[in-house]
Amino acid sequence: MKTSRLAILACLLVAAGAFVVAHDKDSGTVVSLPAAGGPTAAAVAAPAVVDSARLFGDVRTLASVEYDGRRTGTPGSHKARAYLQQRFSELGLTPFGAAYAQPFSFTHTSIKGLFMPGRPFRTEYKDAANYVGYIKGSASPEKFIVVSAHYDHLGRNNGLLYPGADDNASGVAALLAVAAYFKSHPPLHTIVFAAFDGEEIGLRGAKAFINALPFPRAQLALNLNFDMVSHNDRNEIFAAGTSYTPSLQPVVAEAARRHGVNVKLGHDHGRLLPGGEAEDWTDSSDHGPFHDAGIPFIYFGVEDHRDYHQSTDTFENINQPFFSAVANLLVDVAATADRTLK
Ligand SMILES: [Zn+2]
Image (cartoon, rainbow, N blue to C red; front, side, top):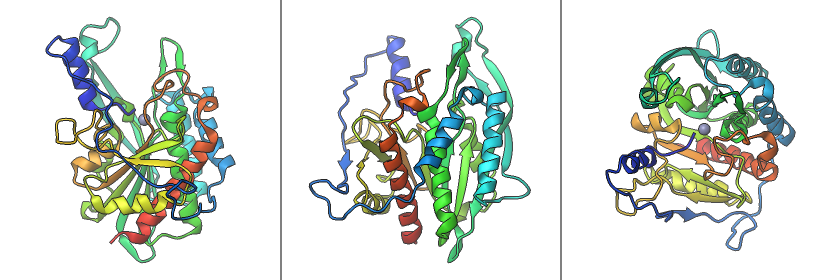
C-alpha cells in the first residue's frame, strides 16, 4: 500500500463534487542524490553483500499461489507466518519474550460497506500477528533501530489473486537480507526486525506494535521502513522522511553514492505546506505510526506502477537487477545508520 491519505481525501472531495483539486505531478522539493557510476559520482560501487538468489527466492515464495495473497487472518497469511518463523529462526534472531509472533486484533470499518452490496461495514480481524526479532547491539544495545516491512497483501477479490510481489514480498525479502548482513557483521545498536501484518487494512500492525512496544519507547531511535522496493523502470527509488530529520540526509546520501541506483529524497512534504508535493507519503505505509509517535523514519519505496494493487504484481514482473541493487543499498543504509547514530 502506498497511496497518500491526502490523495484519498482529494478523490473523495472530487467525487462528492465539493471542489476540484488541481493535481499536478510536480515533484516539488525532490532532491536527486549522486549514485555510483553517475556523472557526479564521488565513490566507486560497494561490493554486493546480498545473496540475490536468496532475495529472489523469498519474493518468489511469498508471492506464490500457495500463499494466496497473504490477506490478514487467511490460510495464506498463516503460510507466510510459518515462512517468517522459519526464516527468523534460521537467521538466529532473538524474540522478545517466548515467540516471534506478536498477535493482535482489530475492527475495521469501511465506508464502502454503506453503499456497496455484499461489502461489510464492520469487519472483526481477530487473528492478526506481527513477527518481531532482534540482534543485540555490541556498543549501545539500549538504542534500537527498527527495520520494518509489511508481509500482508490483498489476498483474493472475486476469485482473482493479488500476489503482492512488489507490495510487499519485496520489502520482507530486503528486511531478511538486512538481518542476514547484521548476523555476520554485528551491529553497534540493537536492530529490531518487524514484519507487520494488517498494513493494507490501515497500518494495523505498525499501530499495534507502537502501542505495545516490547521495549521502552525512549530507546526507539529510528525506523527504516521498506514497502515496494523491487519494481521501477527508471532505476529510481525514493527515500522519504529526511525532511523531518535532516541529520538523516547524509546517511542516505553516503550509502547512495556507493550503489548504482538513483535515490531521490522527497514525498515527505504536505501539499498544503510551502514547497509541498503532489503526493505526501508520510502516512502511506508503516512508518506513519512511528512518525505519529515522534520517531524519526526513512521510508524506501518506488513510485506507483502499472502493477500496483493489480493481479499482475507477480514475481515475474519485478525488476530483478534493480531489486538486487536496491537490497544492497538498503543494507548499506542500515549499516551506515547503525555506524553514525548518536
Ligand atoms: Zn505495501
